[in-house]
Image (cartoon, rainbow, N blue to C red; front, top):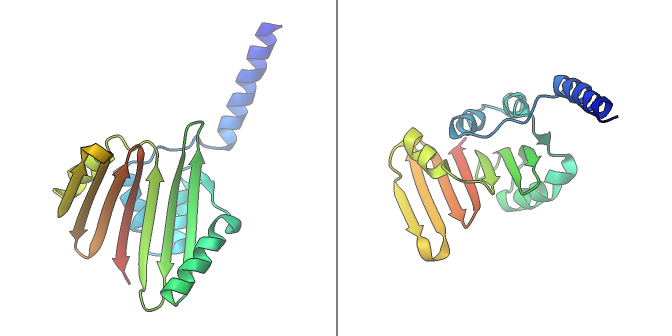
Length: 166
């Protein structure tokens, strides 16, 4: 009986794996590549390659409404999330039109090990860096050729935001 259960589980996992790719781990290089997309169509295709769940309209509608009120113009947004047993990673990309027109991308994770070092390796020394051990906080900022990169970590939660004017 146990052998049959193992065979069935193996067959199911093979077919499940062939119909949907396993979610991809986020790297700094992958994040920057996604965030440099020129429009929502391009970022949607690249982001979908992560194999993460696409955020629904319900997931983004409240944020969109608040942002439009703040920005005074329209905004297109797309996002993905990856839920694991101990955390949820998310990636959002938006293009805003209006007085503060810009494009930005934000990645958040509860597994930030190595992210700030990978950003330093890719972007060089930050323009501003602050680490406060007593509150487990690290922030770093870069401005490279009109593109702003921001890293913020408190405890085990971290966020990277990449933005540029339009």
